[in-house]
Amino acid sequence: MSPVPAWSESRTAVVTGGGSGIGRAISLRLAAEGAAVAVWDLDADSARATAAAIEDAGGGAIGLGVDVADRPRVDEAVAEVRAQLGPATILVNNAGISPFERFLSISRESLVRVLAVNLVGTFDCCQAVAPDMIDARWGRIVNISSSSAQVGNALQVHYAASKAGVIGLTRSLARELGPKGITVNTIPPSFVDTPTLRGSAEKGFLGPGAEEHVKTTPVRRMGQPEDIASACAYLARDEAGFITGQVVGVNGGRTIC
Ligand code: NAP
Image (cartoon, rainbow, N blue to C red; front, side, top):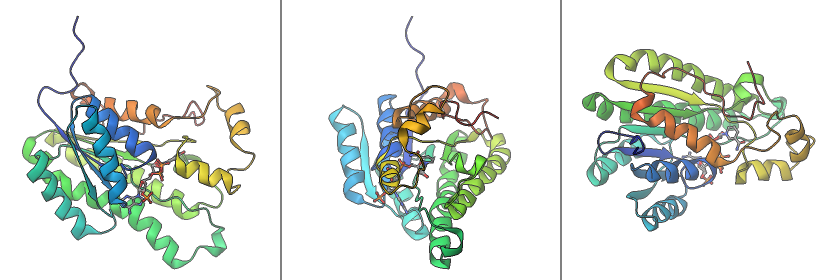
């Protein structure tokens, strides 16, 4: 028996924040499944490095410097992707910032930036890419939210609020775009081993530390970026077309609800 192909025709994916951590793993995985991948990141060099890794493995990719909070640049990048790889019909909104700050110390500037990147950036990327999906009558959007939106997190009121917004956006967009052949789902990770998580742990923001978190995780290990990437790749496949508007927990059982 031959394996079920991910897609019946060639597909182009955009992955935001693809230069590092979870976004890098998602980019590599979608490329391994056969998609051409446009890797976007605030840091153009890291985006190009992920794209180069895909090309070294025999896949097709481009890396672009894109701040998802900069709508004109997002629109420009969608056009670049269309010209170089074809219209994008898979979008993974992964770019995010996750500062830890006491509630009373959160400045207006910090609040606005967190919302601009995590929530408005997700909204804008969906709105910029959706026309190509509507034309194709097929699309897959996966938004990376956070378990902080489900269970809350001290020192991350702005971050958790932005990610809760991503969950509401996902559910509503799924209802609106479903009739056009487009699914929209969200994965809220928890405690995935990435540079950002390690940085937060080193600064003491994760409480008792990695070993204690692992002890209270039912599967008794930290998440790896590839855990999120494999779920994301499944949601992007043709065969996942009946899954939409869902919050797909990939967290080792840390939040069971
Ligand atoms: P990461 O390693 O820091 O990766 C995030 C990437 O997004 C970085 O390459 C970063 O670029 C990029 N980025 C930041 N702001 C951007 C912007 N305005 N435009 C475009 N790219 C931008 O973090 P991660 O842990 O993989 O997190 C990925 C996503 O998962 C985030 O949305 C995060 O909130 C979510 N998440 C992670 C965890 C976890 O345990 N790791 C848990 C819950 C949710 P620079 O490095 O240049 O800033």
